[in-house]
Length: 79
Image 1 (tube, rainbow, N blue to C red):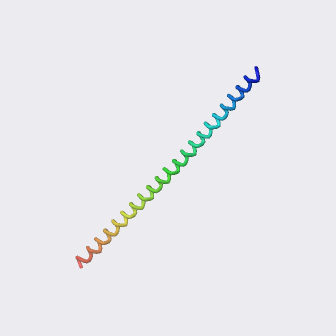
Image 2: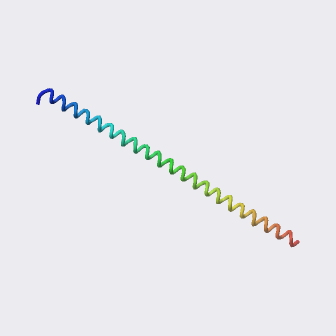
Image 3: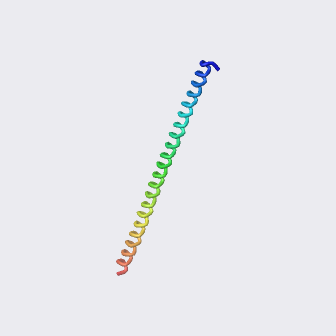
């Protein structure tokens, strides 16, 4: 092989190495992005779940108050 051929081959190898490094960085970026999206979806899900629990608790308290109020009204009308 002539030095020109070696130089060309070295250049091709270096170029391919840089391409692989870029591909590796892109894969790492995509993986990190996916992890962040997963975290975000989990947090959104947890927030929705907490809100639903709060809404259910508020609904329960309203029913308890209405039931208690009706029971109180009931005893006053029969007095």
